[in-house]
Length: 152
Picture (cartoon, rainbow, N blue to C red):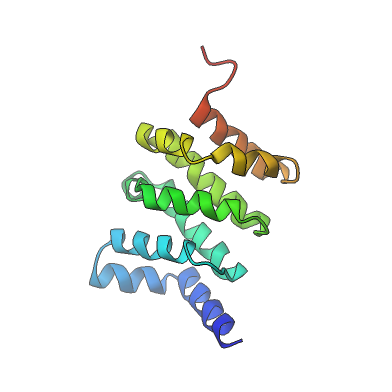
């Protein structure tokens, strides 16, 4: 029970921007990305912490000056691995999918790496049960990594 309280508290600090502020004051934004990646790689995830980390990753992938920090293969692998775990909150799945889709769009190297991670085995089964917003992001992601029948 103590662990969940700490994870809930940590998720709240992430949401309020305190963790990002502290890490970037003493180090760099790259260290913040490393921290988020480590949180994604944890064997057990508290749902609220996973959702907040997914939100933070999506926010970093939105800006041109910070998206490059996410091009790291360890980060990409952690995002795909988290999706493969299943039983994630729909909103967390959406944010992770959105982040991956933005990374695939922004970087040919990320797109190539994602195409070697077994992404279809993770994403395609989820297309059947995902909500419309998640399906849309996943389809764009798969199109980015593997092309579409309309691409010539």
